[in-house]
Image (cartoon, rainbow, N blue to C red; front, side, top):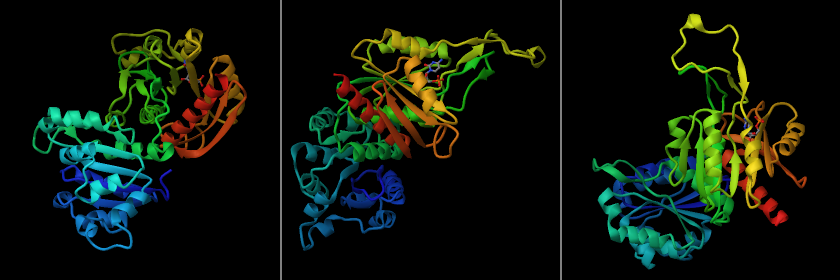
Length: 407
Ligand code: C5P
């Protein structure tokens, strides 16, 4: 998705500018063509040489703006960009964008471009919370060109603890990847999407459980892709690494542990959902008995009596309303197609995404995946190895086509 794509990055004057170095570096390594514009103040935080070296191209400043070019620089750059990232977005530049002001290379290029603009503000909490800044922030988002990443809360460079930290590079990068896929369209706006993620844990006692290697990465990618396309997203997730969950802003998260807890949460959440995407690796069995105190080693049974876990997705399909779509995943080894077809029918799903878990470059824990999508009308799409975010977008496109066909 990123290879060969034209990404323009406008850097504002804030300490979070140092995080943009990682964004630029990651994009350049992934084969993107990156051009950087820096405001005068941005250069007081990081030298233009740093971003020039990382992007493999001179970084543009206002000094370049006022030089003669064959065509005006802001027009050249504006027409060139497929996507424009503004990070960190300062209160000053935010205000200028809202009022269509252009007094430097960065703001002139915004006005001279038509591509989607991703904006990642960063500032001190009091600055962020000013009525004027909040009003501008809301106003900017009424313009569909702008895609917003809210700042996170945490420790700020001014020692304040509060909202104002720029979104982490990983979150910015995934949003850029989404915009390159969608071209900025928000075709899931107004949709409420419920996603399950991660591997459930079926406890024998407080410290021992039956689990599986699912990390929840596919579910997180599904949540991000849906959010980036304008949906409101709820993620019901089994325990997962905090680093994976931390960068998720504007996604409602509901933590659960066992399949029974997941079932309860999903049944409740399903009432307010349009699409339900079951990407969780839910246990099929649990220990028949639960001990509330940790069992001493000597008391551990030689063999474990198991009880079946109800098939959550099959149960949800019974309660499904006509406007709802139910999408399941099938993690398979060997030939993935026959079992996926069988699960599509047996679990009464609208769409199933079958993905191999016995091949390199896909499945549990990998950042990449591959799949076959099937729907009830017999449509089939094979997806070659790609990032989990790209797979999430391809799946939503497939479900959208399925909605068009059935309506
Ligand atoms: O485990 P299985 O391969 O049957 O999973 C296929 C689909 O069924 C997945 O979407 C999974 O989340 C769902 N499932 C479920 N409840 C279970 C087992 C699986 O909803 N107990």
